[in-house]
Image 1: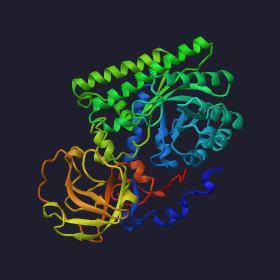
Image 2: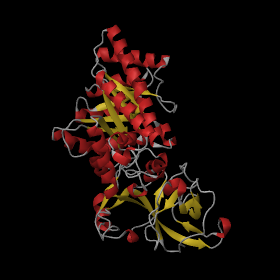
Image 3: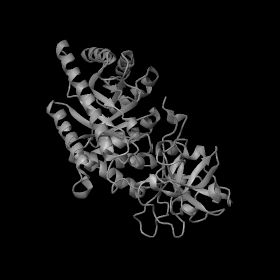
Length: 475
């Protein structure tokens, strides 16, 4: 049974009737706000980059979980496949009407379930597969026993799942190391299922979660290159094993990503000063050569990512592409909160502190390596305060420095490159509203049932709610 029965989405029409046309100063707080202008830019840049490089593209929806932003991620070109990744089955069920719409227009659609397949997922994946047809469902494998669930999915739906072997790039979250004996065991089981018609062994998939620890464009490019090198080696091993077993495989897809490494491909399409120093240009050239080598060997390259449409402070701190494409202005997700009280002189060095009604449940509990805090206060509504310049590591201003479940404590602080702070700048006061840039958009947004959508491209109406986007809920 679909989770929509038990986790119905919030009532979009009622929310739109209540809030569209109102100011962000009138919405209940804490509130998740999405600046669609920034999201459009971020999605457009990614589609332009992968299209220009001749790469496949797969959009992860786990960050936002909405129909509307999924549309921006896959674009309007019906000749381009609408390939998605979901972290929960509820996301797939929620997005099913959109994919049915695309299919009715002749667009190729596919959903990859982002966890290695489990037996419990089979009935719900089968229902989606029946609705969308052959080629619509992809699964991940990192254990030979999972081929039983893949076979049951085929039996229940009549649709053969496309199976990717999940590669572990060192994160030890899921996957197998390409050079390991375990990879061979999974590959042999997958090849046998392919021979028997229970699944289609379609490629390899990696998620470079460790790329969040990167600190430069060069590092991001090199991490993406390492991902693709490992999967190319794995693909060649699969081809050799299939040849020995007389199993005919389709063109294998190597699917690489995580937002920092996916953003790194944009370093291959910039020119002039944006192309960066010689070291970066060399790394980009080596990556481009590798992409060509994968294609020359008869395989396809696919890039995947999820948080890039909204961005967040963790992404800024990874510095994976040019600042013109990855800046404070490009963070599309913010949280509006109200100041409940001010505590003069209570902070470090006699600075003020303040209490806001947004704590761990509104912001999440994920930290950012560039500064000590849970969120940074934006310049919104603060007279005389400009947009920050430079990196998060160099920031100085109001942050959510401490928190409890519903309490957020604003403190005057700085990024980790600052050895000391200047005099405290502007003050806040009880009743004032602030907007916060979160550390990790995926976790922050998961706590809200909908987004108040604003559009900074509407001059003079930047604070006006122009739409409400509701989300998939539950698992």
